[in-house]
Image 1 (tube, rainbow, N blue to C red):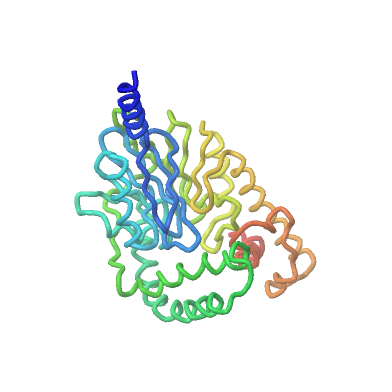
Image 2 (image 1 turned 135 degrees about the vertical axis):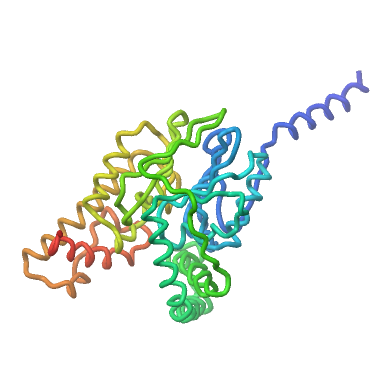
Length: 338
């Protein structure tokens, strides 16, 4: 009987080891397994991912939804694919043209196709040509500013002020190096309204309704899994960047997303959430429009936006510095809706 005990323990240990799921740990993002073969990579404060991405295995090939700001961090996506024994990466999808969602394109092999809308590809070519030289000039002073804040910080490192430093310093560090490291890789596969990337394990739909957060945005939808990746059409408990957006079209896009059947939503920024965040984003856009209209009615100028108090519902949201610029942008929209 006693001889059986060690064997029983060894079998139990072997069984635990067999059941233990593989884990990939990054200093730049957290991995969330949403379903078998479906993952969200959520940016960590202090890391250089900056945006969230998706990794989806259809049973034959893996699709990457957005590719981070830093090409070095994008290289970790292949390590995640290997760690979880997923199918080879076949496609990278660019949801829209902002740099934090597309600069990792260059980190994938030539056998990997980059998918976007035609307008998104056009904007990437235009904006990257303009932005990378500008970042060479303005990003280093911003790095010095946040380095100084970090050096002289003596408060609670778990508190909001410290976390804000961790949020912005890596962003500007990455931008400051872009002119040395980024080789803009443009999308080579263009979709119009939709594209199916189905495999034996699941259906994958790429869908676009045109303008929203930018002049062209697309989403990735897993109808059988009840999961949707919205990119920057949705920010979770973070003020969105609205400066190149189309508020009315953005609202219609969110209303369209609400018609889809899903329970899990992966936003462009912030934690994995659900359908409620669609409602929150719609409320944010409508509240800013109402505030801007009130400014116009009261004869206020755009220079007075800093006098407007942020609504309580958004006081705890991150990227709070966007509120004033968003309101100024919305002021311009209601003044000149055309």
